[in-house]
Every structure is written in C-alpha cells, then in structure tokens.
Length: 91
Length: 412
Ligand SMILES: Cc1ncc(COP(=O)(O)O)c(C=O)c1O
Ligand SMILES: [Zn+2]
Image 1: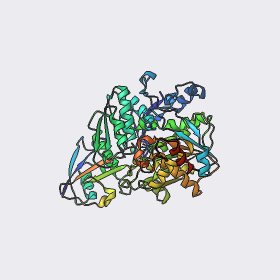
Image 2: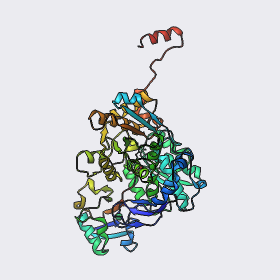
Image 3: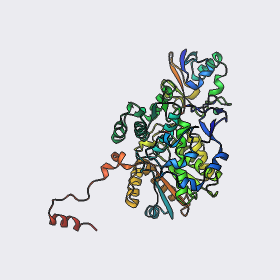
C-alpha cells in the first residue's frame, strides 16, 4: 500500500529538503521503516531507543493523532496521508 | 542582553538564536540559554525596584536579543499586577496565609500579555512584521492587541466554538481572525503545519522559546511583592503547562542570581476534569501524558495534547507539590467563591485554580499553614456564559418605597 508522509520543516534536513515522501506499508510502523530505507537516519529522530515514537513527536494518520488510534500499529488505507508534527505550546 | 543561544531540553543539542522552536534532532522543545554570571552582575533588587511598573522591570532577565533598547519593547503595560492577601478566601478554604496574584489586571485582561509582549519584542528584533498564534482565546486577544499597538499585521487562529466575548475581544483590534471548525488541538496542528510555510512570527510555535520566558515574570513579581521572598506554595492553572514550568524556573533563577534567599517552595497545578491529561498522568503514577479530547467549560485550558506536560510533572514532583482537577460545577463554584470572598471576578481558568486548591486542602495534600499564592490568570468578563445562568438581580421591584420595603423584609 502506498501512503504519503508530510515532512515538517525541522525534519527536511533528513529528506534532502523534500516536503513529501511516498512510502509503502500496511501500518504506520512499516511506512516509517520504508521512510528510513529511503532517507537513512530519519527514524532515529522520530523513534526512541525502544522503537516507540519520541514523546514530543505527534503523528497524525488521516488527521487523527495515532495515540487515539493504534500507535505504530495503526493501519494505513491506500492513499492515506501521514503528518508528523512537533508539539505546540499553549495558547 | 544575556541570551547566549538555544538548547534542546530533551537531548541538550544547541541551536542558534532564530525563529525555531524544536530540536532538529529529537523534536524536543528548544529553550533559551543565558549567561547567568553576567546577568547576576547586572541585576540587583535596587535596579529592579527602580524600573518601570510593568514586566519590563525584569528586562535583564528576559530573552532580549543584542541591541534591543527600551524603545523596542512592545509594551502595553503588561505585568506588575497586584499580589493581594486573600484572608476571606483563605478562611473559607482552610488556608492560613493565602494570597492572590491578580493577573486579570493586564492590558487584554489575562497573563498572556506577558508572553506576548516578550514574543513580539523578540519577533521584531528577528525582523518579522507579521505576528500569528494558535489560541484558546486569551492569547488571540493579546496578540491582536499587541500587534495593533506595534503596527504589525496579525493572523490569529482560534477554534470556532469559543466564547463570544473572546472572539469579539480579538476582532476589535483588526487582525485577520481565522475561526477553525475544530478543537484547539486541531487549530494547533494546522498552525504547526503552516508555521514553517509563511514568514510569520507564530508566537507559540516558531517564537515559542522566547514567548514562554514571559511567564517567568509572574514568579519574579510574586517574590518581589512578598519582599524578596519565595512563597512556600504556589498553585497555577495548566493548559499546556508552560506557565507553571516557567514560574518554577523563575524561582530557581532568583536564587541563582542571589536576589532571594533559597527557601523551599512547592508548585501545584490545576486542571479541569474535562481536560486533565497532566494531572491524570501525575496522579495515576504513570507520568505518561496521554492526550485527551477536551470537554470542559474552561475553554482557555482546553488543550488535550499539552506540550509542556512532562516538564510540569517534573516541577511539581521535584518541589513536592500536587495536582488536581475539578468538574464544571466546581469551576463555577470557584469563580463565585473568589468573587464573593475577595472581590475578584476571574474567568473559568481562575475557577479551576480556586476549586482545585480547595480540593487539595480538603484531601490533605497541601500544608494549610504554608504561605500560598494562587495565580488568577484571566478575567471573568470574557467568560460570562459560564456563570450567566446562575446570576440575576436578587430583587426585581416596582419603583415604590413600599415595594422596596416589602422586598427587603424577606432578606436576613
Ligand atoms: C487564562 C489562562 N490561564 C492559564 C492558561 C494556561 O497556560 P499554559 O498553556 O501556559 O499552561 C491559559 C492558556 O491558554 C489561559 O488563557
Ligand atoms: Zn533534542
């Protein structure tokens, strides 16, 4: 299955400046592995030593925070958009 | 001018002064790094006490970029708000030495004026001419007002279901006011995505490291107003948790700079039960901040995914404070109790603080003899919807003397 990952500005140094990357994967975890295969080094910035999402990284699949879904196990429909967004301070 | 750079709170990597808020490596928040030795030489109680009667009396301790002069301060007079004794509220709650930091008395009527005047001052130093923010209401009001006064353009993003007065109290200053159909967290997400695409100073996104420092001035003022002493206990409301974290930081800095004697302090945090991701994480022992979908009358605190939640938990745990959360009914009760005992009309966030304080005393989780400061961060006139159903004239009469005599006969 293919999905599109939107890359936030602070991470674009890891994608050679690309704002969007097309990836393959049935789950978010698989998609992030493919992202790492295409842009080695990027997953280290998103995942901690135990392979979980870092605590200040928010990932949205179809506009919903994956912490309200199945985290890295969240399934991706074909054509889904994955957004990676840094936490924002209060307002 | 003692700013040295930025540093990631999570991994310690450094970054240069710019409009950036997250670490490129781990996404952790960037924080301003100061030269405290130089700062300690420059500041003194005497110098501060001769400064302006606003937060700018602490300019040396704020992230002013090199070359900033007094004339560059974006200043509507925020800060240096009253710290008043609250004996009647104290008696009601069972606290012997209670004080209220009355931050309803700011130019746009909430503590947000502190963070915004600092953020826009830095934004102008960095060369921005457009200010922006994602807001639960008060920040929108403050950015709109300060941008107007500074002659900056403003793009202000709010959830469309905000209180009418909070919408109006932004619109009147003439910003581009974008009402987003969704929650504050949706607004935040949108702003997180667009902040990088426009050349704007998003005060709580790309300018956040500087913005957040403005809240330290609550802590500085409390100590100065207590005669250069730290309170034994302070309670603050939490949305993202940023204000609480920065008040704790202010106390630490005052000690570092030799402006106060080092005495122990505790910090406690207050949330609404309908949006309590931080207090839940502390009280369930996991320390894991799980985002929630907010449902509370306290819309100013309705941040379901709080960026500073972990640091708020650290500060409260480290100092031996507590956290609690309260229902909508308790919040409204808190607003009324504060008004009826101390004559201060707070918004829902103030109701959260007072009601949580009452609950923590009742649960025996705080020391009733400790000198306690409650931070009341916004004005009640912006959230009249919350209390309107309960408030009306106590007597409605015809204009005759006997009508009045008849009516008051029933009073006790
Ligand atoms: C009146 C009021 N008090 C408190 C807060 C909480 O601030 P913080 O996000 O720094 O925790 C807000 C934030 O929006 C607010 O408007
Ligand atoms: Zn980092």
